[in-house]
Length: 117
Picture 1 (cartoon, rainbow, N blue to C red):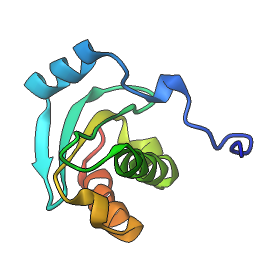
Picture 2 (spheres, helix red, strand yellow):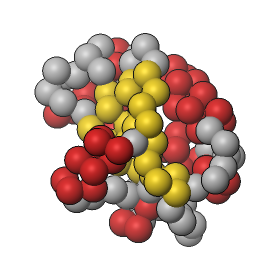
Picture 3 (tube, rainbow, N blue to C red):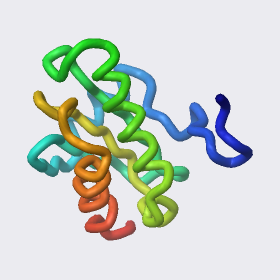
Picture 4 (cartoon, rainbow, N blue to C red):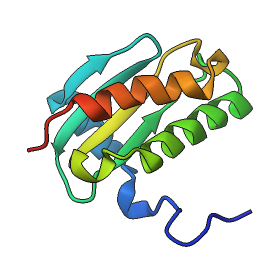
């Protein structure tokens, strides 16, 4: 099933290169929650998302589920348009067992708390 018009997550909205992940990891501001580490980077338009989920989280099915949940929360968050920063989300061990609501709450705290600019 494909997403409807305007509901996808295009390549321009993703951080895809290792070089970009490493650069953000060195220079970005870090915020930690119980299940994630968030790395906030330089302002960019549109805001981009990078996701890292290691094997410690679980098997391929679990890791892909976590990534889909993170992307969906980021894509649908009302503050995303005003966010204006690159964001890397690093999943911690055990996040595969939490609900979608927990992912939404933790990611929402970071998206809603960062001032624009």
